[in-house]
Length: 368
Ligand code: G6P
Image (cartoon, rainbow, N blue to C red; front, top):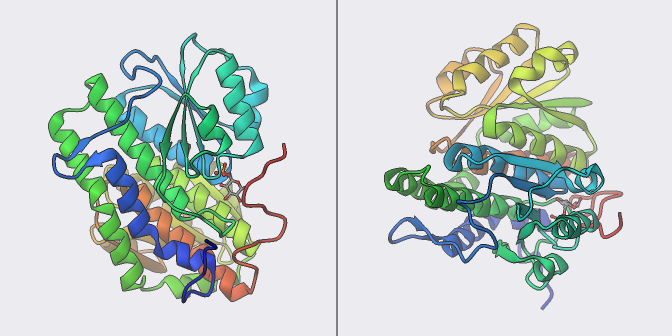
């Protein structure tokens, strides 16, 4: 049956509101809520024996792999390589015989990702895919598939499929950690509990509305350039925020690692460039906050997304502070992905661009 917009103005708005359900449905596939243990299907490689895992994807799915790299390193102590599929396929990287590869795609049909899959297979790699469309080409050609349960995604810019990819990748990292003995049972229970709470936090965030969000959207809509900053696993979310804004509103945006700002983007900073900061509390908070303070000292106007613990320190110099539900730092990138999508959505609506079908973009790019 054809998918409708219901009472929503755009498919994207509808899909943004599906986050809680999609995250819940996806997590229930990979975590047993009763025992709070990760329950993965059989994998095409042994998580204990693999020396390294190669990730590849395109667009937002590639950004999901960049977040996953932090998770796999942290809880599974496993080296991860990730590269966009259009680069990987011509890079000719040295690969261990019988090595492990993981590809991520909403459609399962993206030409470059599919080509990377075939290359990796032809080089003796065991390929696992995370896809949203069962029976898609990537699902069929992979040695194993982990499905995201996001349902059809119509808006060209990925929203719920992206957070569902994060949910699968976080569960997989925890499963690897347990198998490899790098994660204690207590840690596993704590982190799976944090993951299982994400759908409720997503609902809370979507229902409560986000304070200064509309004011920030108005500032961003009036800007020519926007900088997104984050550190650690929030750095890829800064990339995603910039990507979404470019895709939907045609405003130039850059995502940068907060600590790298002083090596370039700081030269751009003045009152006309809003700085969107992703800065939840946690071990990296102080470092990121001090980068933001440097930007503020140079006239930068800081608009920060944080939580109740981080808000007081940021309010000392930030122009606007949006407070998200407090969560374990492990799951913070999943929760922070939602406001950056919402921001891009609101800016696009203010600018009157075609939200669901931005110019020059396609939902699935099936040509090289
Ligand atoms: C296009 C879409 C993006 C998507 C990317 C990868 O560029 O506009 O939203 O992230 O393709 O698509 P895939 O289906 O492989 O996830």
